[in-house]
Image (tube, rainbow, N blue to C red; front, side):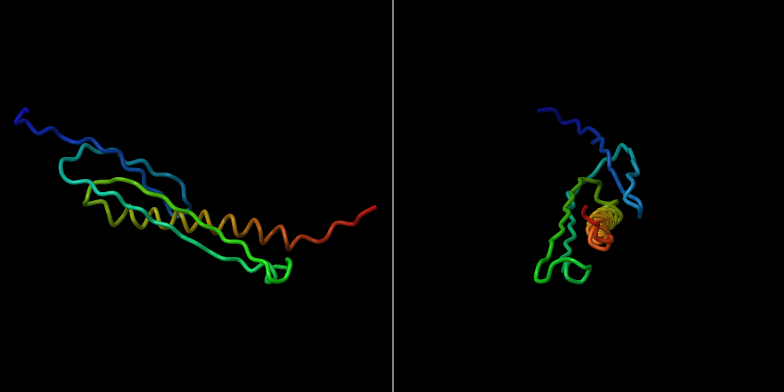
Length: 105
């Protein structure tokens, strides 16, 4: 076993407020941490013009590994990404039920 400690190269992917990835590459020495964040939402379809007593559950979970000193920013970015993905999916369902009914021939 060698007594030489090498640098650990890490690549951290962060997301902006709109969920677009921001790539930050850095050669870091030190400890890395794994962060997991999730977001869940339940949509009652009757509230958006859908059938009564029916709901849809939305869920997103992401994780990343980053240098310890970037953990707070990475955590917030993962949370925003998950929240934005769930919100986007829920809004697509809302739009579907709020569309006017199509006439049949």
